[in-house]
Length: 275
Image 1 (spheres, rainbow, N blue to C red):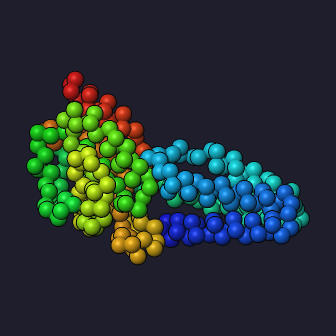
Image 2 (image 1 turned 60 degrees about the vertical axis):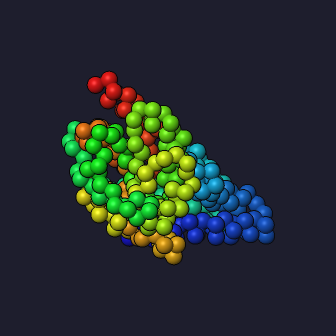
Image 3 (image 1 turned 135 degrees about the vertical axis):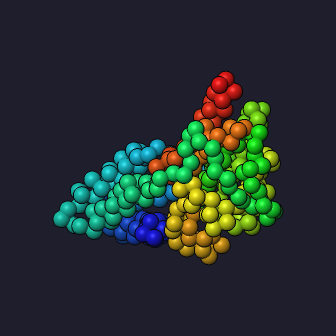
């Protein structure tokens, strides 16, 4: 609950802090307020980039942004004993630190999917509302990508990246299955955006994610309920099972911004072919 409230609050406050620092710089001038603008703008620039130029992954610590925010904080300190610019920069730094070291980290329960063990029987619905069972996947190599929802820019970028590699995956006999607890309507909207014949599946109420230990209670940012999303979601996860239904690869990232490259999936499948 705290994380979903935090990220929505943080993303709302960042532009307000930048606007305040910018107004003070316009009114008073001075290096300190300019530095405060830099500290606030750095974090805001990161999120704007995520939404405007989505990337499937980032570095865990985002050092370049730390440098910009830290420089802004030091510049604001030059105004002492005037404390307001430093306070604004300090808030920007605190919010960023919480985002990087707390919000971005994923707390995972013990996973119910283990490499070398059979994939548990799973039941979903496709974008048309028809039931789908993993028991029907026998004889197929499956790449299961559990994603948080259409609202997550990193998830959308990751799906786009997988779609771009679909031909290479298809040539290896891999069936791509994209799974989310979001509504059928949202899933159908997403499926319509891609020409690659991937399976877009709905995990109603996250029942299968709970079975696999991938459920994220209150994992959706607060306020997205107004757009038709549930407050619960899944932990970003990739599973590859072979034609016999045995799990051969699992990525259980502990940071929602750190995700495997598609080339990793191709390497796993190629190793299966050689085994």
